[in-house]
Length: 243
Image 1 (cartoon, one colour):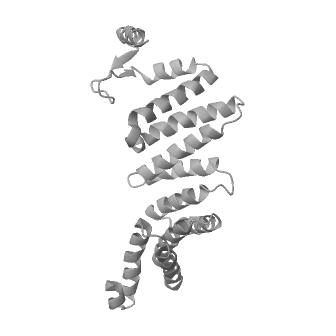
Image 2 (cartoon, helix red, strand yellow):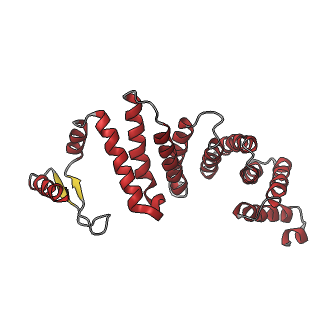
């Protein structure tokens, strides 16, 4: 129970194996950290593999329940716990891991999308891991490819970004996701323009505008219009650009 846990933590603190944190990340609860990483690693290593799986899953579930509407803020931590549980389960030969794989992918995607503006390399690792977990033909591969392409574009790796956007367009098209196809075409047009392929860039942009305009209005179409306006300015079609 809670009282025995608190008593045990106080005892560990007195033995200088853990120490209380000055500020808790959970309001109203006390927080402790290991006094040294080596102590943490030894303690973790003493837990049997399958028990580690269950503890990681319980920890992730607790974080999700605690965060509720702010799950994205804890996405990296969730990805760690679910990812560790998945890797340990596979190493132990466990079967029926579909639910755990889905939870891991979901957390990794959230972590990647959240970190892309701050740390492109970290975001790319998240999307790489998602793609490793997704079999060919899985409907979620299109979004993972799109986000990895976005990370490559933000990092200035335009050749890689172009290839990934083309793959995402094909995947969205095969899955019947017109909005996904349209937004990928828009981003591909930007990459092609930066690479000097102006005619092809405009072709993809026009196709993106056509696809997205036929769908219900949304942020993808709103993002497409400024790109289309910029393209018209560059060719001197100012009235069209203003419209």
